[in-house]
Image (cartoon, rainbow, N blue to C red; front, side):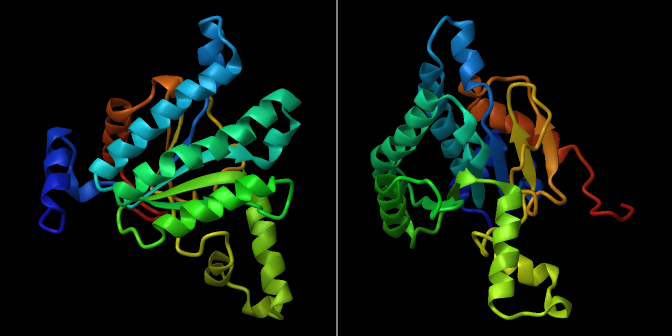
Length: 249
C-alpha cells in the first residue's frame, strides 16, 4: 500500500479493493457492440461508436486504479473476413480514435502502444497515426494502453519464431525467454486478468502467449455497457481467486 501514489491508494480504497492484489496487466476482448446496436434497432457501426465511450471510461478507471498495462483487442487478423463496409468502418474508426484521443491520453500520462502486423494490409494513413501516437506518448510513465490491431495470437508467435530463425539461432538455443523477447512488444508482461464481455467464453486467438496463467472473467455485459463499475467488479472477482501457477497454495 505504501508504494502506491496517494490518489491511486484512495481510489482503490474507495472501490473496496485489496491494494496488495491488484492486477498489473488487464486485457479486454470488447465483444457485443453489434448486438448492443441490434437490440436497439441501430446500425452495427453505432454500437462501435458507443463502444468507444465504454473503452475510454474503462481505460480511465484502470488508470485511476494504478493498472500498469491495459490491452484491448481492437481488430484481429480474422476481422478482414467481415463485410467490406464494416471492415472499412473499423479501419477508419481506429484512425479517428488515434487522432481524437492521443492528446487527451498524453495529458493523462498514458503511454500508447500498438501490436500486430504493420506490413500486411494496414493503410498507410493508419500506420502514420499509430507511429504519431506512439512517438507522442513514448516517455509517459502511467498506464501503458496497448491496442491489438491487425493482430492474431498465433501470428505473433509465428512472427517471433521467424525472427529468431532469421537471427541465426539454432533449435537448442530457443527458450521461452528468447521467444518472449521477439514478440511484438518485448516489454509487455504476462496478463493477470483477461475480461471478455457479452457472454462469449472464448479467447479468440488473443495474446495466446501472454495469457498462459491469466485469470479469465467472462461477463454477460455487452461492451458498450461496460465501464468503471464493471471493471471494479471483475477486479473483485480476480481478487477472490487463488492464483497457483501450477503449484499448490
